[in-house]
Structures are given as C-alpha cells and as structure tokens.
Image 1 (cartoon, rainbow, N blue to C red):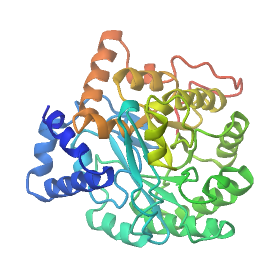
Image 2: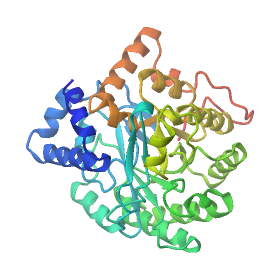
Image 3: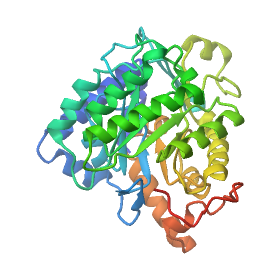
Length: 376
C-alpha cells in the first residue's frame, strides 16, 4: 500500500538512480538488528509452497531474476521480503563499470524496462568475498549468474567463465551461465552450440574442482530472440552435457507490439526489453523446451510474469521455478508474498499440490522422455 504512494516519487527520478535508492534502503534494513525479521513479518511469503528441484528445496517457486542485485549486496533483505530464491549477478570474471549512463529506462504504458547496463559489477573476486562473509545458510537459496567480461575476446570466453565459476561456485546454490544479454558485444553469438559447448564443459569442470564436496547445479540462460531450431539445439546440448536446467528467457531486442509511442521508445535507445512485452514469447519458448526435454531438465521461466495467473500458467506449462524482475519494479515489495499467497489459495481451491500442477498442461513431443521422473 505504501509503495503506491512512493512509486510516483520514484518515477520522478531516472530509473537507475531510483534503483540505487531502493538498493540502499534494502541494505540499510538488513543491517539494522531485527530489520529482516520485520520484512518477513510484513511481506514474507506463506509456507506450504516448497519445491524440490536441482537437488535443492526452494521455500517457494517464485524467485527474483538476475540483474536486480548484481553484486550480492541486498539478497538477504530480498529473501526476507518473500522471494523463494534470489539469483544474483550477472557477475563477470573481472570487474567492469558497464555501459555509459543513462542505461536504464521505464516504458510505463507497457509495464516494461529497457536496459543496456552492460554487466556493471565488481567482478567475481569481490562478489565471492561478499558471499563468503555471509556464508551459505540453511533455508536460503541463492543462485549466481555469470557472464563474459566485455574486454575478454570471444576465443577466451571459456576461461573467463571458468574463473567466475571457480571463485563463485563454493557460495552458489546453483550457477547460471548467461550467454544471452544483448548488452555485451558478441555475447549472444556464444549461444551457438559450437561456442556454447566448450564454455559449459569448462564451467562444469571448474565447479567440480572448486566444490568437490557437492554438485553445484549448472544452468544456461537463453534469449527470447533465438529461432526455434536454435532453442532445440541448446536443449539437446544441455541434455548431452548433463546440465541441470535452462533459464528462459532473457531480455529481447525486439520492439514489436508496444503501447508506448515510437518517440518514447526511441528516446530509450538500444538495449534489452523486459516485462509484459516478452510474456507471450517467453511462454512459447517454455512450452517448446518442455516438449523437448520433459522433466529431464529443470526449467526456470522468466519474462513478463506479473500475476498469479502468469505464475500458474508457467508452472502448468512445465516450469519448476519462475522469476520476476520488471513486475517487481512496478508492483513493489509486496509482489512476491502476494503471488505466493494467491498461488497457495488457488492450489487449495483446485485441490492440487504444486507437483501435480507442474507440467499438467504440457504434452511432451519427445516420446523418449519420462515425464514421471522429477527434474534433477
């Protein structure tokens, strides 16, 4: 309720400055004794929605996508605010400032964001130190999203990702290889299986060496702009390499079907579009992936999720987890707890468990897949 009054004031500020202000507030809350307890009491999600996947137990299937907490500075507060898990990053092997400002924009009519942040972060070593100080805690699920350092040439990408995996793997509940942001030149070319295979193999080996006492689940994040044949190829590669899952999808470079005027869109310039406009494509890709891999991989659906109907539809289509980002900016801090509460109420009304809902509407096109087998 309070956010409804604060939001117009935040909108008076440039989007990135507003984000930094919110981040500072979250860091302040988690630093104050009892601050996280208060957040949990006011905004926390109800129980009874735990999901087991990736060898982990997630308190809720509703998480926060990478990009909001790039440097692992405020994820404890975000977990207390009702998210079942938080994915930090994107983190690169070396620290970098990102692209010139301004680089984050709102399209309010579309409930969308455009960003060309360019993986601004302190680098894998700095973020690893921050994660180490807090440590991995029971009941918290924190994923780490890694990307390529901008100045590293494409031919050295595998070693750059390997460095991040080695440094961050010990503190990650799961790790995501991001090859799908449109804001690092040439990055999306790494989604081609010929380039992606060596990167994923190098990261898997680095994780196993760095964390021999447990298996760190490894996922890859793909773009909504991939063609259907390329999506199938990535899915097949993930199965071949023994990956644990796919995150679908990242932001889009498309500007089709927007309610905002052309002038408003052009003022924002280049960058990845997120939020409501990517909803349909993200859902289509989820359905295609589930038809291809069934429950042999854990599918994490992100893109345009803003209501309990969206959450229900993604889970029913085969996602084991969902992530929000743009909707969190527009709806405010009550969103994760509200979505969890409404999901629990709807499951009760329908007489379903979460496991019964997941994949219910999907029909696998792969006759060889065993949909009765839970995802890893």
